Length: 458
Image (cartoon, rainbow, N blue to C red):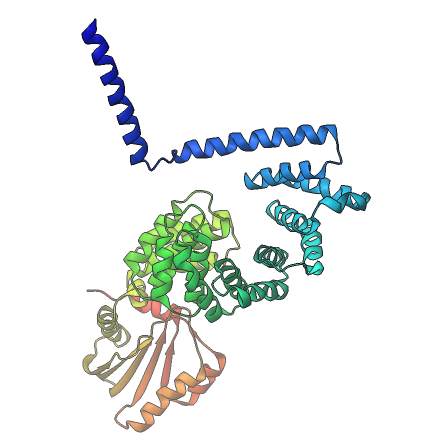
C-alpha cells in the first residue's frame, strides 16, 4: 500500500506534465473546429438573449441590431435582412427612437445584405441613401454600389463607383475584378486583360475570372495565353464545356486536328451543357473529323445536330456535301488532303480531260494553299498545246471574274501558253462566265469536276 501511495503522486505529476507540454506544443490555442463551434455557440447565446429583449420590448433596437449583426456575421442573410428591416422601418415610423442608433452603418450593411439576396431594388434604395448622406465613403459601401449597378447592367455607373474605390484603394482586387468584367462586356479587351491579369494571382481559383480573361486574350488573338487558361478549365463543371469549345477551336485554327478532336470529345462528356454549346461542340468536331478524313464520323455528327435542331447553321447542306465526299473518295482527297496528295491527284485529272493524249508536266506551282497551277504539254492527233491548268480547291467557292483576269494576264505574259483550264470545287459567277466567252479559258465547275474525279484511277 505504501508503494501504491508513492506511485500515484508520481503518475499524476507525469500526466500533468504531459498535458502542459501538449498545450505548449499547440501554443495554448484551441483547435480551429472547436473555436468555430465555440463562436457559433456564443453567437446563439447572444442572439437568444437579444431576441428575449426584443420580445419584451419590440422597440429595443439595440437588441434588434445585435441579432442582425450576428446573423450577418454567420452569412445568414435572410434573417439578417429581416432584423435590419425591422430597425429601419421602426425608425422611419418613429424617428425619436433613433437617438441611440447610428442609422448610417445599418443602412450600409442592410443594403449589402439585400445585395447578397439579389433584392436589387431594396439594395439600391438603402445604399443610395447611405452614399447620399456622405457620412463616410467606406470601401464596402462603394463596392456594394458598384456591384449593384453591375448586376443592374448600369455599367457606366458601376465603373464610376469602382474607379472611386481605386482612387483611394489602388490595390483593391474586387474593384479591379468587376472593372475587368465590365470592360469585357464593353469589348474593351486590352483593358479587361490589364485589370484581370493583376487580380489573377490573388484569385487563382476564381473560374469566372479565368474564363473571362481567357476570352479576352482570345479576342485579342493571343492564342497561346488564351489556350493556357482555357485548358486549365477543361474539367470544371461550369466552364469546362465552353472552354473545350474555345480551346479546340484555337487548336483547329492552328491545324492541330488530333488535339482539337480530343478536346471537343472531352467537352461533350460534361453533363448539363447548354444546348448551344453542345451543338457547336458537335459541329466543330464534325469539321475536325473532315480534316482528319473521317467522313463517316463527320456525317454521323451532322445527322445528330439536324435531329436536335434542323435549322442549325448549314447542317443540311453539310450533310449533302459530306455525303458526296463519302461517295467520291477522290473528291474528298481534292478538298482535304495535304499539298502533296492534292498535287498528285491534280496531275491524274489531266489525262481524264485529254484521253489518249501524250502529256508531259513541265511545271507545278503549289505556293498557294487555295489553288495549284500545273503547266503541261498536251499532244493528240488534233492538237499540240502548252496548257495551264489551275485547280481551285476551296469547297463551294464562287470564282469571280477577277480571278480569271489574273489567269488571263499570266497567259498574256507567257506567250508559250496556248490555252488554260480553271477547275473549281464550287461555281463560277455569271460575270466570270461571260469574261471567258471570247478567251481561251475553259471552266470546269463542281459537278463537272466530280465527274472527272470519279474516273480517276490508280
